[in-house]
Length: 348
Image (cartoon, rainbow, N blue to C red; front, side, top):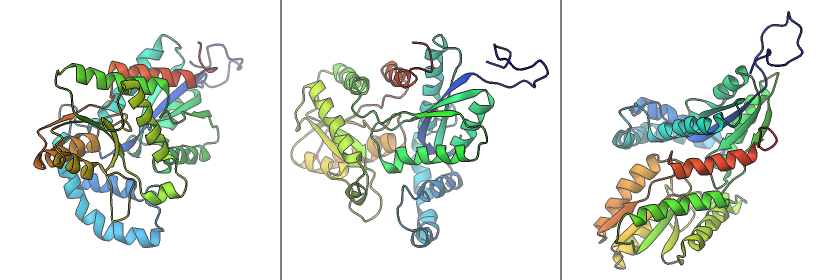
């Protein structure tokens, strides 16, 4: 919508885009390519965030620059190479986040033509500041920020909001802003997870003996300082059990992707997989409810590394249930959540 669509500006006023509403989906981030240099740049930005690593920079940066960024990028680049979408030359996380924005824009297109849906990455490209600027240039006077993290943590949701507010500090003409709250217990989210699991199970007569709901890990000290992440994960798991009619033995909560020597949230996914195999569990399924889209942690860590771990310790079948991604079920959920948060900004 431009100034010609009903504004009261004088005829000599320069053209100004206005009257639009923006929605910005934000996910964690991704390297631009799967080579070592691209991965090093990405990890340097990610691991320099004080929300992610809470050590003081004078202590952490020498470790990061002197050791981690010298040794870790080649291994991570090799992992990205295994899952890279060569057809579109992008990581799965970038592909699915982009598709979610495109499909959400189509769903809202007939409902309110003023709405523009875009996407960004907290680390890497496209950057949050760049995308907010683009929405503003296109006339978005109101913007809904959608951090794609169902469960809140300071190292995920809060750092997205930090960067959004930092961007607004540089703008003379700021848009009105809303931020999607954590949706760990929203009925639409629980239903989307349950339907995805049910569809997977219905496709095979042989049911898994155990389903692991594996969430991204968090240092224990962050929880001790008051981060609600563990509680959000626990409630998601409880509601999912209730919806599927499973008990605590059939659907278990674990935490993956720990990094460094400190204690992280328990129980650990990898240790649980080994223990279950040794106890005689032969058929296992894993689902990752905390990830809005498949990525390195779901496809390579859970889909490859942990599959090998389970089979090596006595398991015989390991099923990976995909994330919601750009599925019809997942898009219906996003449309519901975003539609509720846009109440009062767009037509009912």
